[in-house]
Image 1 (cartoon, rainbow, N blue to C red):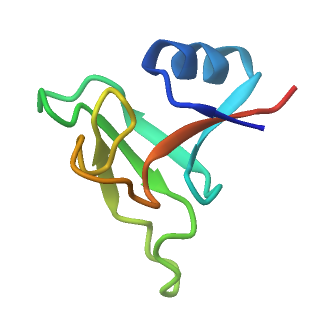
Image 2 (cartoon, one colour):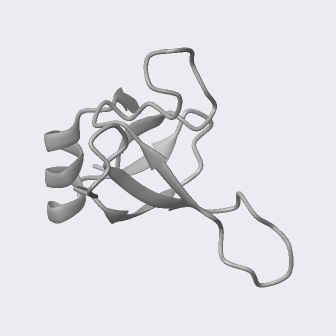
Length: 86
């Protein structure tokens, strides 16, 4: 089940193994940094499967603390959600 993204809940879910961060389409996201120096887009991560070319790693993507890819401007398939694992 997908839950609306919550910054603190996502960190806890990952730490205790009860959830993972995914995109609106269900693609897994590996978070690299939660608190980057960019105040508007502090979350950095890689969307698994975003770049299928050979063995290149997916590009680093950034989000707001609300899990939004485009801020408050519009919905995106890259917006973050929490997927419950238990």
